[in-house]
Length: 65
Image 1 (cartoon, rainbow, N blue to C red):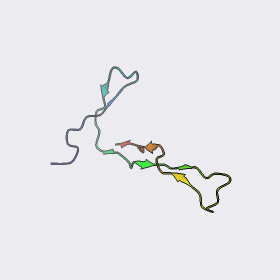
Image 2: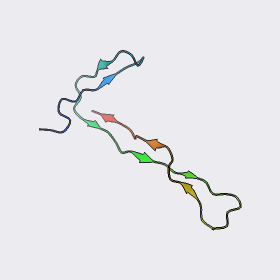
Image 3: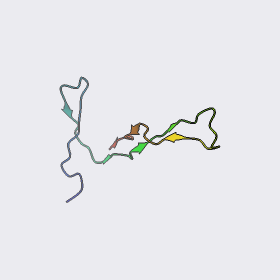
Image 4: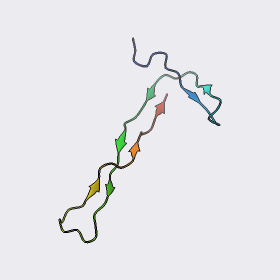
């Protein structure tokens, strides 16, 4: 069986009523990533930049054919 077989995709303009999108051939979900926040203090003594590794997540872009 093909991965994603019988997957349904709908769209909504108001968040309440959804309309199925017809004729899709492929859904590419993209790649998720997570940013980091630079937090180097002005008076830092280590000589290195400091980062907070728990930045915001980015779900990437979805491409539908």
